[in-house]
Amino acid sequence: MKKVIHIYKTYKPFTQGGVEAYIDSILSYQKTKYDHNLLSIGNVNQSSDKKKIFKKSFSFKSDIISFQLFFYLYKKVNRKKVILHLHTPWPSMELFLNFLGFENIVVTYHSDIIRQKFINFFYKKLNIKLLSKDNIKKIIVTSKVYYETSKILKNVPLSKIKIVPIGIDSLTSPLKNLLNSKRKNILFIGSNRTYKGIDLLKRLIKEKNFNIVIIGSNLKDLRKFKNVKLYEDVNESDKEKILSESYLLLMTSTSRNEAFGIVLVEALRSGIPIISPNINSGVSWINKHDETGYQYDTNNFDDMCDKINKLMNIDEHSYNKMINKAQIRYERYFKLSEMIIEIEKIYSSIPNN
Figure: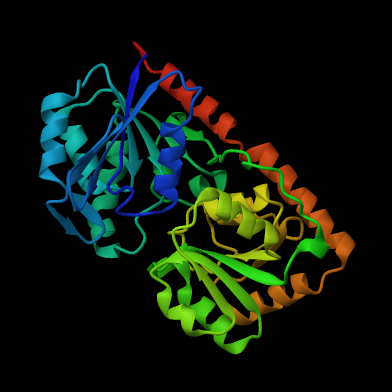
């Protein structure tokens, strides 16, 4: 069985996010043809059968460096035979792998560098050059929308680009999506990051009389509001149950840092209509306006509230239609098994693999 090593700058239990969930779904998939492993960075050294977490040496802005990880790659990993699956953006690792001369690299390009404008000003040309090199065999982009709106990716040879949407596994148990079994709850899933639009969420909580259910981290200050119920560290089964009981999923993200939004796919899978921003990223593609929910003008509180009210007051027939279309959209585009098939086709196309 050929070996694939995934490399990402942070991982569980030190961070929780969409990229971590994406990698974890590949590592834990049972019917794979490849031996998947992970190298990452955390607060302390951790090691298991499939994962090695190296202690962080230091960080600069959103870049994280571990000298132990660099040394391990230099000494222990075969540069010709092993497939490295790099998850970017991660400038220091992109430079380091190029310097060491690894020959078989697959990149999942999760997002552009957005917030670090100063770094990106100097790095973007080099980034395009690195991604265009022969040792980068394929660049996986999670949506066509993101590819078409990325100034970096549009300057990389098209032959390297492969669009593979993020897929998630089927529900662990069948759920009933009857309108009369639901509470008129607004569900928010996410952490307190700058691009998540938490200020929009807080304003909604303070100014409107909606019941808000939150699954997230670093949001404990929202517990003080009477119309908020907050869950932390829920397992997948409990998350599915909370989703099934919710009336709609709300996303408040404000920038292209939200490149995809796995929570939106989770909502589609559970047949939950979505209210999401019209960002030039995969977010705008996942939630199809007026079919699986509604899109609002990004960072526009009034438009967001209008769309929430519209969905709250929709008739039963139209709501159930959205439920069905959400689940159909999940089945068509976002099955984990289909994602794995497409990724493994990329691995198998690499010479000697």
